[in-house]
Amino acid sequence: KQEVTQIPAALSVPEGENLVLNCSFTDSAIYNLQWFRQDPGKGLTSLLLIQSSQREQTSGRLNASLDKSSGRSTLYIAASQPGDSATYLCAVRADAGKSTFGDGTTLTVKP
Amino acid sequence: NAGVTQTPKFRILKIGQSMTLQCTQDMNHNYMYWYRQDPGMGLKLIYYSVGAGITDKGEVPNGYNVSRSTTEDFPLRLELAAPSQTSVYFCASSPLIRSYNEQFFGPGTRLTVL
Image (cartoon, rainbow over all chains, first blue to last red; front, side, top):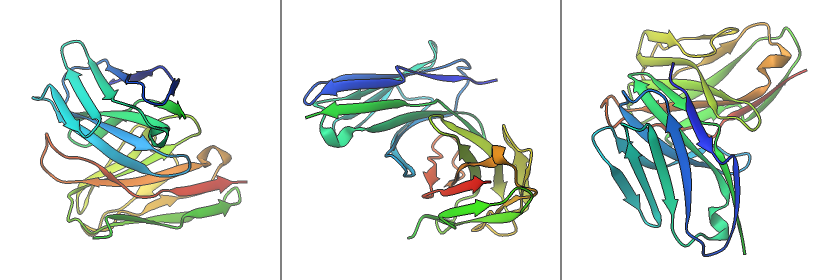
């Protein structure tokens, strides 16, 4: 059974700092890994999707990496802003129809 | 495109009542999913569908039923609601391309069972 862990559960940083969020998974036979952002009381917004054959994906200040052999992905946020405050979730797809989600990292960026 | 839409946004049920959560997508996606999210937790898969007429259980299917008569619609039925079903329910869809099937989510339905 695929298990996904996100550490830390919460993170607080001052504005402007670069930061890394971690996602680890137990089964390396995956199709893809997707990072989401969730604001309080809202739905999920897709940030980046990394295919199993890729090592990284970039979008603006965000960079996600994937190391299947070690079962790890990281989401790098450059020059953090208060508007980046949210919960970040990773989801691993290891089966055609099923994704397994981590419990998320709640990020607070202080002005 | 409206994307993935869900109704209702909020609902309060009494124990033992039944209801259907509606989900519609207009992106012609083959895959559709229902998840629940409990406070402070990630999402857990309830049911999913790979196309019209095909459904399969996810991680937490007990107490729920689904149907998929069209590509666009994937309703979730709760029979005999229980307090343990208090949660936020999200519907999602994704295209058929296996390695690049990015999931798109609806805004969620917040359900309370009293």
